[in-house]
Length: 290
Image 1 (cartoon, rainbow, N blue to C red):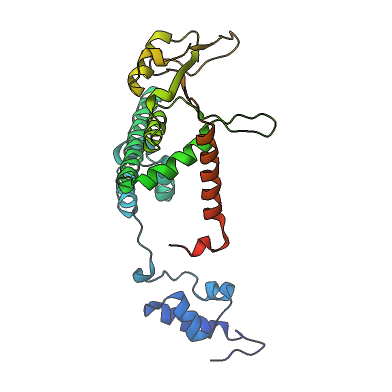
Image 2 (image 1 turned 90 degrees about the vertical axis):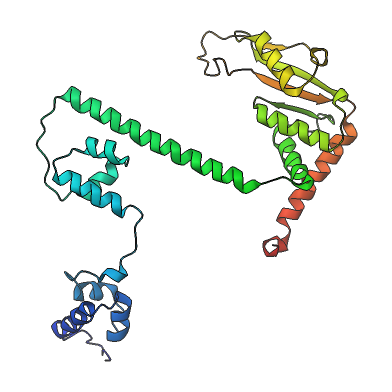
């Protein structure tokens, strides 16, 4: 049917047709195309009060949780108890059950607080499980590294964390500093790939003076599998009493600096490799590459 300038004049007749089509199981788009109603506001008014057919509803991964939450709410459970039972957030529970009657409160504030705390602990535990699951799946997706994979990763790692040469201060020397033992291990694996002899590497620990300095020195020496004679004098950072330090505890071991001696040529190659990676990633046809 065509609608003239005074289209939708027979609104009630059009609504009857729209409702009939809806009850026959047609979607909004199908009704729109069949009745040639391309104004969303008019279409909303035509279908007002008529629920959509089941097949048009998108599946929701939380449907089961929603149904269970409503069941528990009808049994008189509070948000805190439902959260503790299902491990979902209170905001989701509130959205799912807000049309249901509120149960009578029979607990003291202390009891309610204890239940709320347990519910939050359940939520945090489930979040942590999901977090670890995602990390493990991502780690498995990497698989084995080829030499080229390690090579490119090492170049990018050095350019992010290593010292760089500046026009106003020539520093064509490979020096790398980091506090993460995994990063240090990866950097050493990269130097091994480049056939840099370990005897050319000099190590320095940099740590706060109030930390366990000797334990940190031992830890780094064991990590890099180097004799203590390969380590220079440890650099101690003085304590500022006005500063509240957060890098404390048994896992604080400061930073380790690695310097490759006689490495000006290696540094120039690293800089060239880096700009080669940048050029390859940003050239105009890069988006068409597999």
